[in-house]
Image 1 (cartoon, rainbow, N blue to C red):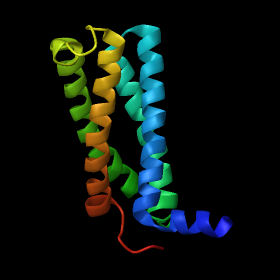
Image 2: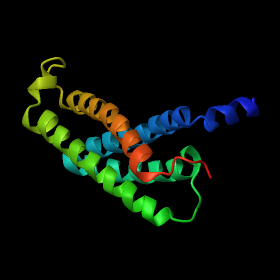
Image 3: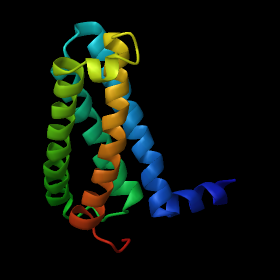
Image 4: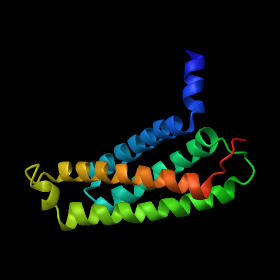
Length: 146
């Protein structure tokens, strides 16, 4: 069993997907909880994004892309810069689809605001996972495993 788990996490794509799903769960849990407590779309979105980005950097740097400790600050900066771009996309999608034009999704869920927010969150996270992998693979982490 240990060998199977090790093989799984030695596969970069599978490991990235696993921790991407975990980061998405961290994001979704944080965003939905904060939204339920405050009703504030932007506050929930930003807080969830920051929490998930820190989780994602640690797992990507140490487990997925197996980087040496040396140079982690530079990688964190580039990671944060790339994730800031996807945060901006996340905010724009949330503002447009939850606050400005909720009927786009709402027409399918009786305009239930919590469902609109949940559906938009899931949609944006799928798009963001793909973009984040490309940014990580191409611009942030070294291709060789250290």
